[in-house]
Length: 473
Image: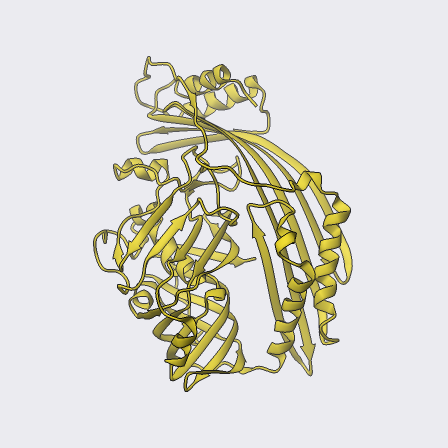
């Protein structure tokens, strides 16, 4: 990595033609990926990707250039290219940077690079076998393991310098069951800002078993009913609801582009008084956790909705400047090849006071969503469509038969207003959030909640001016 003087020299070069702000993002990413298909290890990929990007902001104009040449000469050349978009008068004040320290440390017991590939392959094989052992109706199993060690160096013309190491590990199992013309799938995943110690708390074979059991169970499930009905979502359903139906609409870039249903509603009631929505980058071990965002701002905990009232948005540097706010530490990018944009981290509906079991007992009829799939939302108007990976009918306060093929269709703000019970539990899921062509590791969560009415089984989708997607891992 570069010295302090070299970083200052690059930033000075970036602002040579003027500009309000410049930063450099350097990255070295060491990855391992293992894939198992058709009962065989089909791929083992390891690799290193390294590069840097230089950004210059001048008024409403942003210029960004990147390179794999991370020598001083290479970076000075990129800085000069990025500086060409600046039109303002050059400041005579030289850039002086100071190193910022993290507010907490990661506790990584087994960094991935200290674990042999063969040991990682063993976990993949265990998950594969766990799913296949369930039933002969399991016809296909795919398992994906991945880990990454990402070292970043970030410096900007405001005087901040950050060095950080981020480590993430994940395992995903997809099982396909088939019988009498019916084909159903089940998936399970685990992951976090953790090393290989993640397998001390989670058993890969059990993960595969759970995926296989879900796929087989769905073969016997009845088609989901269609129509408006009460929906109870379990905490283990994951937070697709809050991520898609609410979270994206609270990202400041979408608000400023008039693509959010939550625009100009600070201080207004946008959800039931029982609902609080939080984005927290500081939860140890979660998939979306970090100490610094990709602009060098400390990761933070933000309450976005409190007692149903909208309190604020998620900002990166650029959007914060436009709204005369401070960045909330939500500037993220997929790699050095992209500019940062506001993104969620670990986003959740805060736990309430209700006993989760009593919520079900107090529901005469409806659908119980035990596990959510992916989904998408039109952030302009809040309309969403989510897949239900595992859902059951509720009759007279009891969970009855499993159903398949269910979707939930609704409108984010309207759904949050109709939340009338919030459980005392809280469950997390992991995913890769897609926005503007960039994927970002996130987690989301919710307690058991009851929504008075949603459309179940509908497949209608709206034409969206701005769509975001969640790939559930």
